[in-house]
Image 1: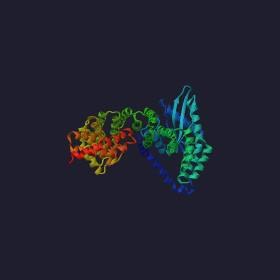
Image 2: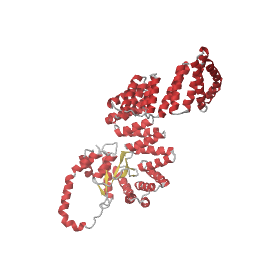
Image 3: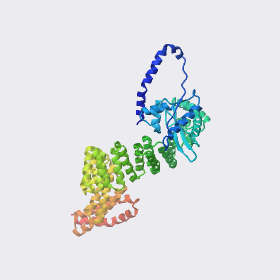
Image 4: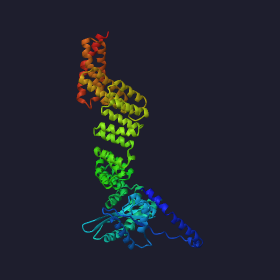
Length: 570
């Protein structure tokens, strides 16, 4: 159940209580007028203790009650109010929650807000060989990323461990008054004053992470980057999963080009908050860009084990695995994701899954899952285009042509649409159609760089085929494609390959012209050698040996070609 439902149900449950209170205020108004002129003191802050997490049934609720009892006995009620167990349980029950199970972070925050609690304590409890162990945290209700981990408490009995937690909690609260003042100064834009207030709070509680975050924020606004990093590392030493400290460290280390430390901070962020979709996207993109996505895999797969069937965790794992190029596990995780949440089967899901199959060299499976996606999203041009690519790679070019044409008819400006269509025509051995599509796309604002690459690929294929078969028509087709590629976007590769293709055409034409005394062939030879002479030098850097050989050979053929034109073309 969502935190929103929790809030709505609670408000509905307590409306009569609000009405009764208002009635009492109205009846008492004439008497209270004089005293109301004097400002009433602020009520003491409230703390809520939620059921702890535990592998043993009911142990988490027992530990929470033990800590609640110990804190109640150790504090001054004028300075702190401990919210009773009954108030917590009645709200949870009214909202359909278990009173014995731990709450998700956002639900715990929502419950704290409903009960008007300023802070809460959450944690885990487990049995040990000698007794019990409690690991707890103090969390601020206004922002549940502001947390103070308390020292582990191990004892023979639960009440003894709870007493240790209560003592640590009381000590950790010593930073809160300064943090509240620091936060107020920060919001007013008084960053230097906020820094000073934070440092005074740290003097009282040197390991404070909550006050440390306010200090880091104040330093960041003053652009004291070295100091921010120092604060981040100090906080991480106390709390390795502190989100603010991890963010600062990741950003600073990335800016400074320290990829190893940046990666450590990013993976720490992922482990700290794997259900935060926005954060996950940032982390995964950063890790993928640095080629380090694989380091996040064990972290997120551990989160999947801890949260079986949770759609958010599964989606995070799916994205991480795709970025890490662990495609088999990504596909398996994706299948689990759409079982857990059918709404996750978006067009993006089908496109990414198809790309994973394609990367595994399984074009038939890619086409199949795309078919499922298109059945659900029949007018999605992007899916149709991806399907066209998958079908073409699977050798089903007739079906691919249909899919590509349909994609372009739905969205004539779809990125890569005409390039894909040209590639399919090439696979169907329809070179004239390839050229027509490329020219049409170029004239209508298509990406010339992409189109040039398509033409280069077709030219390269034609050259390889013509050179192997000594088929002059195929080599002339290569020249045509390579000229088109170089016109769209000039490149050394296109020029060199154009020159070599033209030279090979010239060789073939001059041999036949000599035998048949054919004028057109003689002219073809002369023009081809001229084209070769112009373009082969572009390959002197990348293809030095081959380019030098062709450039040495051209002068040996050129005089003969000139002589044949004079003799046969009268």
